[in-house]
Amino acid sequence: MKSTLSILFALFLYSPSCKEVNETNNYSTKEDLQGSWEVIKTQGALSEFSLGIIYTFYKNKITIFNASVQYKGNGQITDSSFSFQSIDRDKPEIFFSYKFSNDTLIVSSQHSDQVFYMTRY
Picture 1: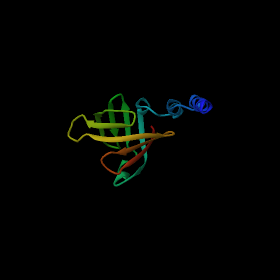
Picture 2: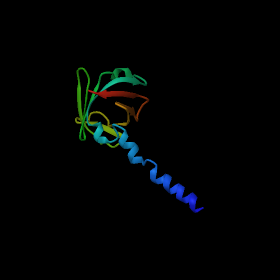
Picture 3: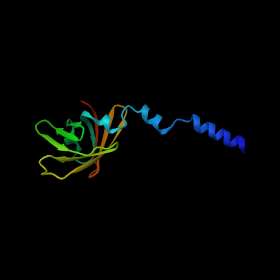
Picture 4: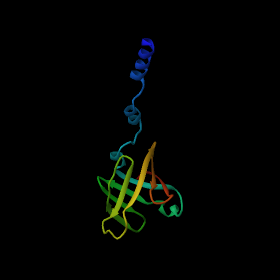
């Protein structure tokens, strides 16, 4: 019994912690979301209209820019989600979940089946 506990304790000490795993991911926190991202691929209903849109994150400010219109707003950003509320408040607040896969930012709308794949702009 004592040797079994010793082995388990040794395995625990030498196994990688969750923090170490997260550190190997290039993008894992809300700070890594900061900057500009371009939508390069989409999925879901009517999502093709979002191709080429640029999302810029600066602290809790978010700007969404397409070929002719720029939307500025405020948001709440966490390590896995963000919201966008237009400054002029004529549109409802929208919510997204996000994750990173290598250098790709994958954003999912919490209101529809739309998914956006983005790269740094």
